[in-house]
Length: 157
Ligand SMILES: NC(=O)c1ccc[n+]([C@@H]2O[C@H](COP(=O)([O-])OP(=O)(O)OC[C@H]3O[C@@H](n4cnc5c(N)ncnc54)[C@H](O)[C@@H]3O)[C@@H](O)[C@H]2O)c1
Image (cartoon, rainbow, N blue to C red; front, side, top):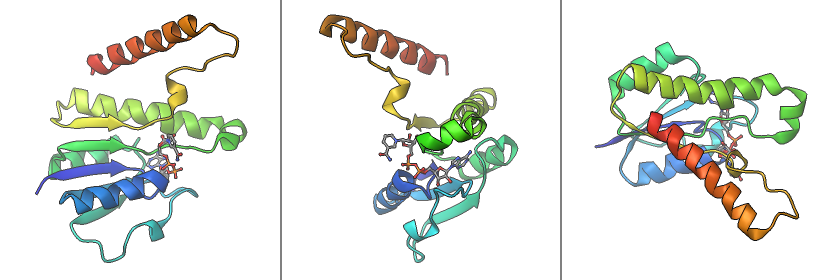
């Protein structure tokens, strides 16, 4: 049985992904910090081949031990602060989870040479924010430029 690790697996999308992977015969490890956005009722109490860890993705020492123990073929990172209003009230929480958290996972995989595939789920606004009024050609150029930067970043890891 293959193992997949989902971060943010008590959230809206993450919990559905946990269910889907489980149906596809994956042993699923779910890691979630349990913020206000998480909901244990999203996961069936009787689910099998599943383990949950209450953990912040920035807790790399514990995360490293989990990765070494379960050796997941895939890691799906959905752990994130997601409510825009809160990003204005408390930006630091967003910086910790959405920036430093992703960086922590990437660095952990890179420095410890962990053999896995990381699938990072984020918002489309990471790619580009388009302003009205730009010509179609210019808009396409901006989008392509952002894609190139993301591909370069992905190749670095
Ligand atoms: N819901 C959408 O419509 C939508 C659309 C496009 C992109 N996305 C992106 O998909 C991802 C998941 O979205 P969602 O709607 O499921 O979010 P959500 O807010 O419902 O769930 C996020 C989960 O991540 C957990 N979490 C937050 N910080 C954490 C940390 N530091 N360590 C561990 N767990 C942490 C929370 O406890 C929560 O359970 C986000 O990156 C979001 O931007 C969502």
